[in-house]
Image 1 (spheres, rainbow, N blue to C red):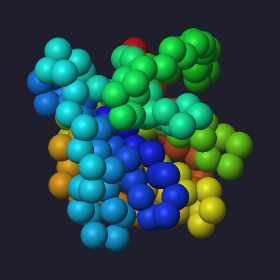
Image 2 (cartoon, rainbow, N blue to C red):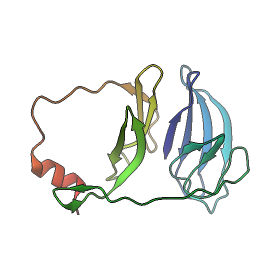
Image 3 (cartoon, rainbow, N blue to C red):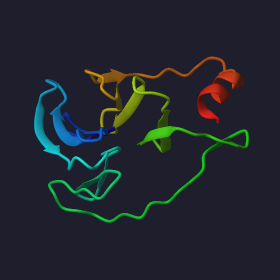
Image 4 (cartoon, helix red, strand yellow):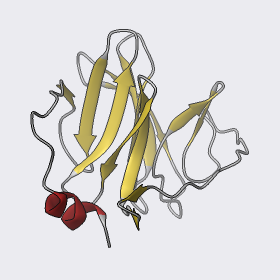
Length: 153
């Protein structure tokens, strides 16, 4: 899944399910799907970003129906010299790259940032709702065991 805040209280969401993938424009206040573009059944449409005026997902897919070629650069994220796995749905927030750690079908799987109003939206694969959340700084660091259990192989 991919989530993208496009301004004017509009969210774009891609769904990642074989035979059921789509990109849709959703009115934030009402949750109404305003535009739905279904993908070919052989595609698994995971992730979504805006490149210029084109939407790009994991495979070549333009909106509406034109393609774009992009260059993908691979970076390895490490924690205590161990590769962090299962990072998903990257989002650029105030100069930082945020990601969720994907571990199953019912976990957080979509992040969208509204830089104009400093709003953060999250949802999950097959979740019926989108949430606007505010994060608080933690007072004490996470136990290394928790980070290792969820993020390392």
